[in-house]
Length: 153
Image (tube, rainbow, N blue to C red; front, side, top):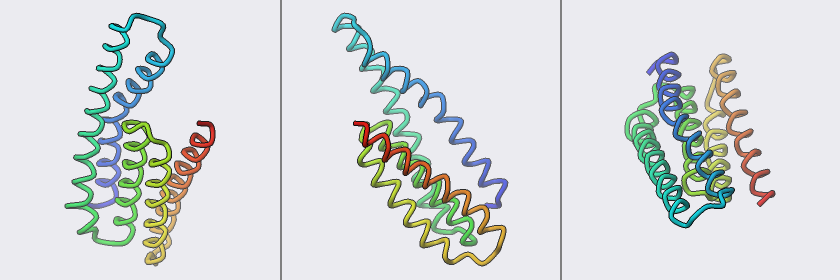
């Protein structure tokens, strides 16, 4: 898969997940701030679980695609790093949002960062290094955001 196709794949799955992520955050806020009957709270909880299930299913599909088809046959280190970064980000989101476990999210993001760092050493092309450095910064920022969130809890 060439660079434009990789970016389209990433963007497509991001767009599929974006609405559900937004809904999940809103539902979680309503659930935490609502002073209503137990019946309404149960409906809110049920809907949140439905959205979480949809997110898990979408992310499982993406992770399977990455593992079975894209990472294993990546034509060059730049592509492999792109896919590993994408995988790390999906694990981070999965842990943080659907499992509501910032500590696990932090661990997964750190693991993804470490794996991508190792792969980065294999790159020789200047442009590939620039793209990978951007992806590494993205993973690092996610990792730092998760750590800060964990400290607040």
